[in-house]
Image (cartoon, rainbow over all chains, first blue to last red; front, side, top):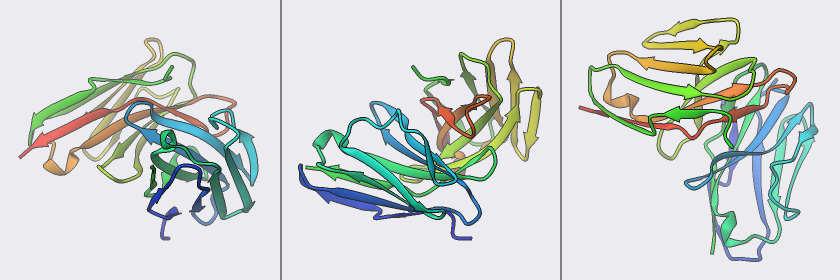
Length: 111
Length: 112
């Protein structure tokens, strides 16, 4: 198994642009988590899904952030419009039981 | 505030020495996990200990859990330069499905 796959690995965009981050889960996993990591705030849980249903989105910072899980193996995190303070590394992780498997992350820079 | 807090924030040791990192948490938990993150990479699961367990081993890793003190420790024996990474504890709470709350991490540097 290739593990959790994220794309793109790096994204540089200008303030106000729409950004879409993508994640492919490990086959057979039914929980999906989106995290954001910065030096200042550490690793923050943004939202998680169980069986394609959003369970807790209280970590989503603003309405500019939205996440979808259109099928059991794929998820997107969208930021529209993006702002410089959104610059961070965004991870998705999938889970079948108690432990989580992280993707390599997307490093987002908003200029 | 973070559920898990690691101590120390940074640790530097010589290759071959043992490294001990501690984690404290605030609420009742179902399990506690340790993860490693190499620079520029995602987190990798190392070991999980359940609330009814007191100690667990995996290779050179030893984890202890003291639920009365709400604390855990991760011991890496005979450290290697390749163990250089950030180490995070994460707590799973009963009734919260598989959601984990991560601490701020300990940066371990193993000098050759």
